Amino acid sequence: MSFLMILMCCREEPGTALTYGIRRRRRSPWARIEAPRVAPCVNPQETASARARRVREGHDPSVPALVHAGWATELPWLMQGTTTRGAPGNEFDLGLFSGGSPSDLVHERWTRLLAATGMRAAVHARQVHEAGVRLHGGASAGLSIVSPCDGHVTSEAGLLLAVATADCVPIFVVDPEERAVAVLHAGWRGTAAGVLERGLAVMSGDSDARGLRVHLGPAICGDCYEVGPEVFEALGEPVPSRATVLDLRDVLARRALEAGVDPSNVTVSEHCTRCTGSGLFSHRCGDRGRQVGYLGIRA
Image 1 (tube, helix red, strand yellow):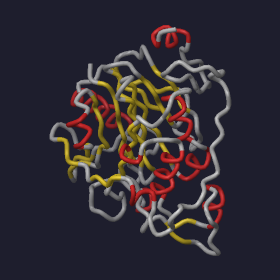
Image 2 (tube, one colour):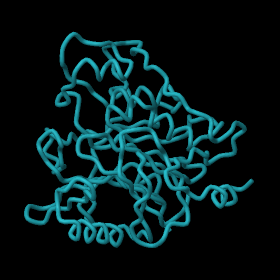
Image 3 (cartoon, one colour):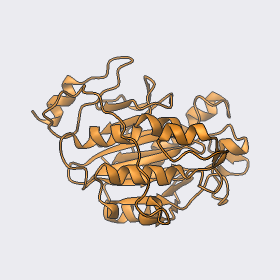
Image 4 (cartoon, helix red, strand yellow):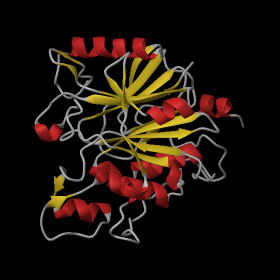
């Protein structure tokens, strides 16, 4: 069955998170995907994010955004970036559900984002810190808000996928062979629920995930993210006796490697929402605004 036929059969039903794979798969697409318990690194002195390639995204002159320059060169058919807060007095807050800016201004900024990226449509959702991932196709022009979820997948050109963040990790996943893309929202709860594993499974189906590209975008870093022991326990990490810092992108990088992604295909942003002065919104700093991580296939 072609992907187009699968997509026609998989129109989103309200409240239903689709789990069909981009590639042909033998098992039921509704089979539950369990998040594996994370094992400690083989070498505790070498973190997964240290082994992954570090990148410092550059600025996009057409829109207030940070872009993965390597992907822009290697995969010119991609449209990818993480918006920033913009210039003082002209903030580019895109949070539809955070109450940081009047809704009419936020919608006008989304229109500007679509125009600047040259994309026909965008999809976004209220995020619930879980592992729901939706497959999209045939979206109406402009911005569409779909049922709550924390991840989006498409192989349709001209459709921009977007997740909102302000310390959580925007995860960008690309299948260069199938020309399919996914963007995921991962805080610690979503990471514990298995949103990364779910997204990778939807992208790869029964096929090998080795060829997928994964980028962990701008987020709060391991020096700034202080959490309690319950977070380590939920993530399957060694539990400290008191509150301490956690590098969530390291946990996610390790999980990507455990899922079979080639280490050379995993990259981690050097930008921290809190401490690197990158002009990003940070919930830990009291910001109500939101940037968005966006990913799509150029038409």
